[in-house]
Length: 320
Image (cartoon, rainbow, N blue to C red; front, side, top):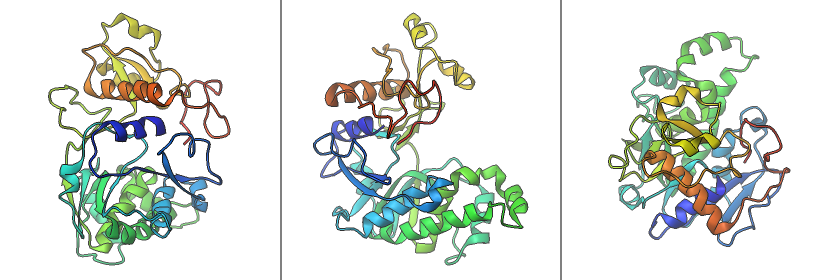
């Protein structure tokens, strides 16, 4: 993911921008100094991350903002490792100012239950409704500095409400299970932190497209700035696809023959190529980023101390 994410930044025509990888780990990993220009800010993991690793996102941003490496750019685009840039994001960056940010519509956008969750946990600005956005967040640096510790606090409030030590756990879980708050606590935490801080987020669509979104035509997605990658498919009538065909992901077989998944331990080693011309937009951009980043930077080093390699099982979560 690091290779392709960095390649996306370099190849997508960004203007007056820089790229920084935020890493949480006990020590600096082997990629941090592997490539010239691959800037890495590293901090130790938050203790709660052993139970819920996404808490590291808010935690490392808070530490980044308090460090000597605090970003100089006024506007920050917060993306995840699996958000890969394909076009310049200036038109969105130029719309952001202090207290006025942007974010892609979250999967729970429009949810009244999410607003109810906010009313139950809010500590300030409880009269406001949440702006239900997810990554990418485009936000002023000074706003992000205020948001980050609140983001961590609200994320932990949600997770702590779901701990078995909480006598009201079952009631809380029943009320909000439909939101998938156990997994997405940090997403709701960001929304709550922004409302608490008084930072308005305009909800935008099609700054990015997900790998599993229904719209897949290249002509319809030509203005999308990034992909939220996960899987790639080749058309069912493309015979060479069978050499990479997966048994995992059958619920998405309507998109074609699945040939790649980030959930596979071989994801950084086995990269289907070439891509047929009639492959969908998401699959094409995903496999192009994988192929061309390896062509430019060389293969991702195999180092079992930091990443699960191809000999560690067929399917499972990637480690980064």
